Image 1: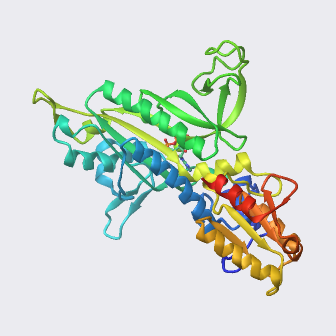
Image 2 (image 1 turned 180 degrees about the vertical axis):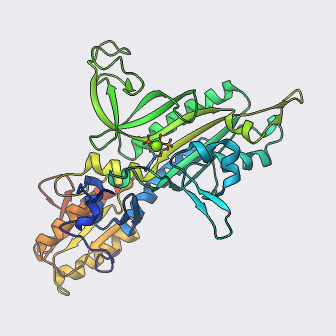
Length: 427
Ligand code: ATP
Ligand code: MG
């Protein structure tokens, strides 16, 4: 894409409003500040953001990684309604017990809820199609918007009132089959976070409002997170201190070597054993091998897609701006032409742009008529992993100026070397 055509522009400072909390006090969260200034998102109100071209491309990269891994373990993608009939929420008791549920009343006095999670919708859907043990197990997932009446939306896109989530629900004949699948999802989640460039730790926690059963939480260490964890620097042990108050210091109970450390963390995903709560509420049973009516065991598995994006910003960005791993960057290469509207450098840059496109490289091409310093500052703020600069000087030398986002110095390399580096990075 040509940057001259990109409708968003970068800003040196985010508008003051962006950082305001509900009570009017000023507080800029790093993720919202950078994403707004770089033109990725637009704030509508506290906790509600629109995604602009760069932000949407990044979010869609994250969603694609999640979709790949959910499909790989047999998940089937659906898209459920987000405007829910109140009856279903009354049937499970959620209408009165879920404090974050947004409730609406129509002009004919009919009541609705906005989807904050979809057990009330997915269970009746599964009930429609699952009649026999032969129809199980199934795992249904979707990626889309959720709405929650959060009391405080203060961490930019990390705690929204409207936000993106992947939610999956699985239905099983037995606890054993559920336990088998639960482990498979846990591994798929670790792959997802790894692929998005985040180091997620798994905690075991009690399921809170959702269930009395055990659950896993996937935590990324960052001061912008709202959870407190203790973890072992030596092994994979991690615990949410809300549920494991006793082990806040000392040696790791798992490896017995590392010294436990405390940290703030953001919960980017979790998996719950919901038991039979929802099949009971919706009288969902199937015929088992002996022809007897049985209720399935249900699991639910969430990933906060927009929180994940915000977490990547919090963990990876530096003083100059955003820093993206290749896998979720909006573009792979930022090609910067340091020539006016015409001239040799412009022609050569146009040519390289076409060539990279023909090689299926995603390129943001800065073809604007601006000073070099402004272009470089924008490039650092936008955070694309590879920067290639073309000027009359580089062209005269028959070279290309190549730099990774986090490197201080650029290198002059020839075309074949540049292409091979880019192809290696984006494989
Ligand atoms: P939290 O404790 O942070 O409120 P939760 O336990 O309410 O999270 P779930 O209902 O299990 O979260 O939702 C699944 C995932 O959705 C969470 O792991 C998190 O990544 C994300 N998520 C939850 N609430 C929000 C929110 N308000 N804004 C953005 N992402 C959210
Ligand atoms: Mg919550």
